[in-house]
Length: 326
Image 1: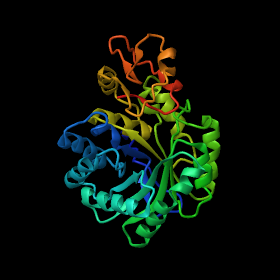
Image 2: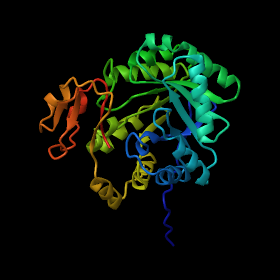
Image 3: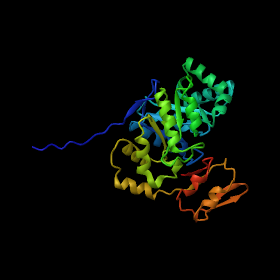
Image 4: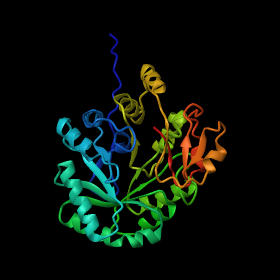
């Protein structure tokens, strides 16, 4: 008698550094469902998030800027998974400002405690110093039981290196992808050295932008395997805006083959180039575009959608990481 066993691979969970937060390797990046990108109706976005939660993803990244708190609140109401860890962040630099942001997050998410709260997008050692009062509030918020861990998000190698030596910072959220897109002060090799240093110092590391804001989608497998094989990354935040994307990413993170029909659905999904509103209009991306699809208008870059082939070449010329494929 021959027995056929179906291989089952469970979602992997890791402790974030020295914190008590045990998170899934795949973190749901919520920016993509909200007003700044896909702008899905709250109920639709919440169903996608809840689907990920029900499949075992227990970690979600958000921010005051993203305006996705209502999506997450609704997802928490409808999911069967009640052990969700939320990470949020704010640009506030004062004690009172950060206090208001944490209170706003707690109220809008409908929770009593947030897993991680971070200083958002720190650019250098100097900006860390300038945000010290906000960091001081986060430390106090942890003592009060409002948050479980204090962190920092960044696109800068210098900040990862500095944060690695600051005892108050327990979690670091750096940009990590195979091409180094979005790193403002070095290469991917520089970033890998910095996050290894932070990891050795006991910091929790959860990476962002493994697909370079969508610009590396054509190398999906290679890009995710690159980040998944970094031994000093505990979790990876990945933006998702459909049930199909959730299922494909969970399969990939769990070491399973992605169903061919699912791959085809994702390939056929309509994408577009998005220029963020902080674009300075330097024009370097327009000069580099092989299809002449980008042009300057009113001190900002605009896209001719009829000419744009979504190749993503332009993104490597943008220091401010303004270009996304969504």
